[in-house]
Image (cartoon, rainbow, N blue to C red; front, side, top):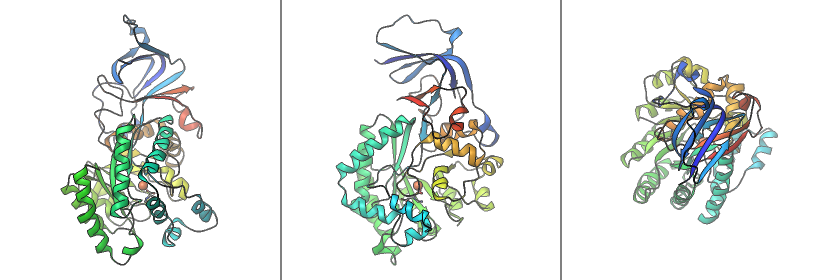
Length: 410
Ligand code: NIG
Ligand code: FE
């Protein structure tokens, strides 16, 4: 049995019993921190915590790893509720095209973007995709990611979508962190279905979904609701078909335009609506009183130079905000959530406390991991992170670009 005692912790963050599963609006400013604390874990389960002055000492020292966290903070690990971590190749040539004046949308219309990734993925074996993704996940874990959602969506054919989902299933079994799988067959229309949307939607519903159901390949269903991609009606039809086989919707909406996708997703009880760079008043109204998480992806805004999601507006309307990386080879080639934390503070004017709630409690909710992730509470099997020695918690988003996470214990 692996027993770990962490002592002299400068600040034990997001700790306590009966913490909420979602923090919304003004509550997002709340962040419990216990100074000069200890934390005891057994096989990853939180057994005890408290002030060092209340620590009764250890009676059984057998097989106990003692970590001195003097000057360091201990936090629940970040949850990354939106990524495309399985892909074949990086796309830095498109990055250079954008520097030279093309827009992300123009590159996509020319056959780059998602279709570029799909062509490359079709050629790669399942084993190679798996090995590459495993390496990426190890790097994400070193950045403090303790739970990861991964989408398909670079397949766009029955064979390749199923190949991606099988890779994700293997990653679930092999990785030390919790992984959730999202089926994103509706990421783009493949070229052969450009003029035949009906044909591709039928392929998703009649060919892909039955295999996904039979092999238990996904937890969620996603669609990219956007001009030149899937309309609100097309998204709704696909999500409804997913719901009938037990997949909850979790969708790409409002990245470049507000088309009414949020209202429809909320109507279908989406677990989260993700991107939200554009938001209409109708979108806000639809979200009020719903159980749908608003997930913002600031690294995507940074990399594509598009607007940042208006987290303050959402919070002013008493809504909850989660933050995720959107790690993918096209719009967000970084899965570093400390950088996301920093962007949220600098560009979206979230306070460090609000942003950390968005990366822990609210992000855990957006992947249905509230029972195990997001807070440091007794009896929870929670991955945690230990920071390097830092003067304050706000130093992490302040010191952008630095790697201040020392260790993930999962
Ligand atoms: O979330 N917006 C749609 N999908 C991804 C980008 C995909 C790509 O460019 O490869 C995103 O940003
Ligand atoms: Fe995405």
